[in-house]
Length: 364
Image: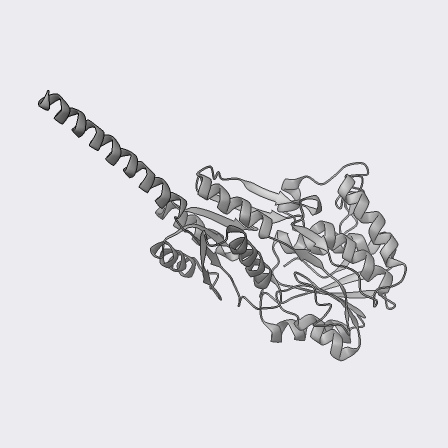
């Protein structure tokens, strides 16, 4: 009898220990902090592109309420060795998902993805993928088109300046979308492009804008990470279309509106997928209906006729009745690139290397 009681007691003890162990493991997992890495090409407070991503990061951290920590690396050079080295440091710090927010990070991230197969990688604006590397971007062409409407209605000289960073499809596509919006309300206006070959260099950006203004442009637009283009417009007494962030309070003298980004929803969804263990690679390209891109509220500097035209075009884009790259579309040589009734495919947009007919400048 004593022997049977001893066996029974031993069995009960083992059950208690087992249950306690399971409970401890469950608690440990629920309290586990997920570390997330972010790489920026410029400073986190650049007033544009990197700051937009950092705002999205901050909203994501707030959403998870202590369950997520981030490791941020600013001013990362767009060189493979620099990217890989930065990622290694992030992995050493425990990051299990890493977001690279500049096109030039692509090859370095692809190499690091091979080195760290258990880490998830998300590259903004690129096209290279792997089982553990996804890409993400937004259809910024939609609000770019809308901002073109505002610029086209504003210009008196019919010459609009566009300060552009890198001659890659992403930037070319944005210029063409903007120019299409301009042409929809002002067929006589041209979009005059100056390349800076840098994402973030306020001195170079400002000089490019100043040169275009001296050539007769009376409205500026940009695909740059700083507010330097708007600074040039302010000093010259011209008006501006911004980019990335609203400049309604920082540049009230010149700012009319801007295509805006909000990456917070995407960051929340993808980090949650890592936490849940169901993250999958893919290529995300959301539009205005997803909330990742939008046009900022028009300021009082925008023409009075602009709001109704923007509202009409916005509704048409969201409903699918207006496609930014639906034909007929001609390039600078007069060649028809998209026939009437047809639409440029996503693949063609993602490899765009030509300008529409109301753009002045070359695709380098």
